[in-house]
Length: 242
Image (tube, rainbow, N blue to C red; front, side, top):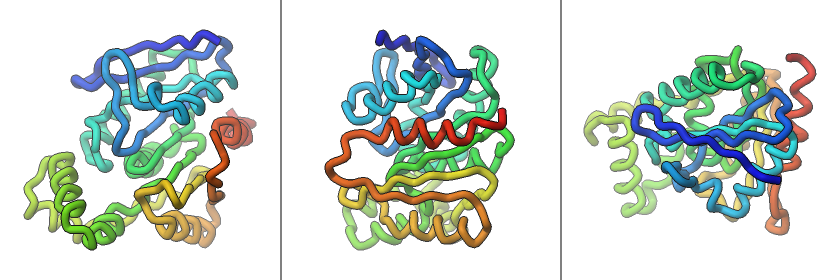
């Protein structure tokens, strides 16, 4: 299958749209982890065999797939959230697609995804999280045990949020988990490969169950090569109502 890609620059950030040969009318917005990047020629998800396999599985099912560099290690910053919303609007104007999108968020990308789900629930159909960071405050506290990683993490977050270290400390104290309840969520977690603790996913699962919101949590075995087909099946189960 020949994969067609289109690159576009938005607010000096590169974005990619992968176009399927036989579109099904639905789309997937990928929000990447800390190693995610997009430039004018390629992306982390193209270069990584495992993730590229997921993209190909989605394209084979007819999904249009799009994503952004989104300022690199953005940690769910306000400007990353705004750019994500802007990209969504542009994609909806340019392509013939159902306006309710699926989300595929990995690691840090889940922070932006949660904000999108809370701010524009009418535009979200379902969400898949892979090894997600669902509580930035909890992750920061976890990293305090390693001073080197902790200092680097605070520097990354302060740069992403465009605040000083002192301002960031105040922001951290006020941080609360974003817990949207309206759209179905599926989490895949591979404990041995995740920077973010399984307890975050467990807590999120417990919250949504208490709220009566659709939630599934599955652990990924080391032997499993790709979950692309399983992701497609999950998305397809939430497309009966257009």
